[in-house]
Amino acid sequence: MTDDPKAYTVGFRRPPEHSRFKPGQSGNPAGRKNRRKMREAEIVAMVRDEPIEIMLKGKKVKVSMFEATLRRTYQCVLTKGSVRELEKLLELCAKFGALPADFQAEEARRGAESVMQKIRTIFDRTVPDDDEDVVLV
Image 1 (spheres, rainbow, N blue to C red):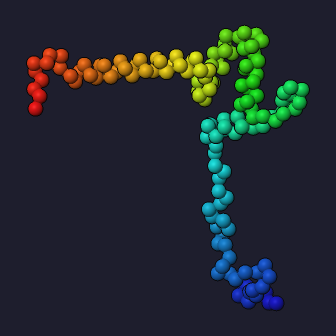
Image 2: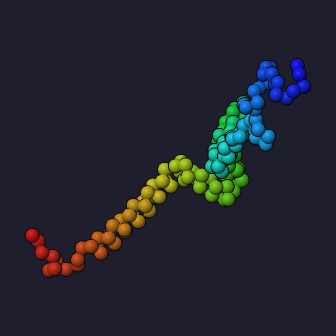
Image 3: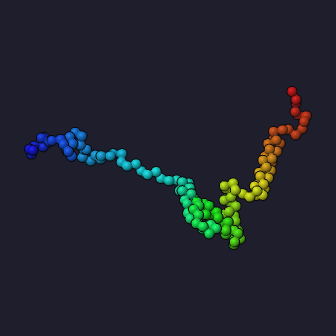
């Protein structure tokens, strides 16, 4: 080996000079990819679906967080008669399409009445009242 810097030997841990990183240059210029940030809906879904253990009929059972919350809300409504809890429960049931049949029937009746009212309004605007103006072809 000589002290001459031009007499550089290529070998183990001694790459050729032309392929070395230049000063200030990284070996991975793009860097590690950033972790994708979770949206609020994804976080809520993840927590909602997380399994937890509860006591059900004297046995430990794994259920989703959502089911445990729903069971607890039912329990509060039935034992305490809490109006606030009842409102939450009915809101959850309506949101997920699990309303009792009588609530669904009343809601359907109200929806049908509003649709019929809209149809009457459109009909009244488009069809003339007096038959004399209408010419049949």
